[in-house]
Image (cartoon, rainbow, N blue to C red; front, side, top):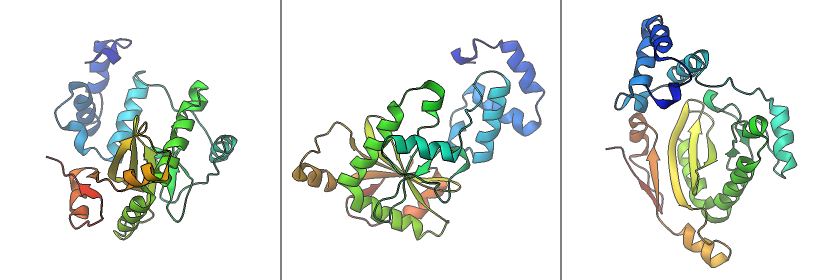
Length: 229
């Protein structure tokens, strides 16, 4: 058990988990025991089950309902025209498309504004998207085309990261890989600074081991594939 279970008694949790079907019970035992490597190989259905049970236990809040029309209006208020992306994954239902030069850049603030009234995640996502376009677009476009050629359906590029700019390449079943770029505070005001960042080598990490073979033959200048140990 962890500190997050303080509001719910350990006895209640144990009784709840014991009463679950075998597969659900196994998943929830893994969550609460923090079994090493447990979270590394979870599928989308597993994540959905875990999220449902955590809500039923009162350990997480129910999701805030928001329509795509409301999201379009929200992002538009901040100057970004968005639409519904093709191949949007189930776990990322609030993700929206804001393409540039043939690349389906996407943004997602996970209904943070609707839940809290704070627009910091909106501004953060817009800022990171622009940094990606200004400094890394050619590299990102080459990776997008590579992922598209894998023939897994529509591909999108999600802006992400905290203090570091990151590009998440994904499709309907989840993420292919994450391209780790530079810290958001690195100077990029001049053409020379942006060109220097674009010329750096950045690390691409496949998401889950079963995606690693997809990138074994990747040969894009300035991209180094980092495999799981």
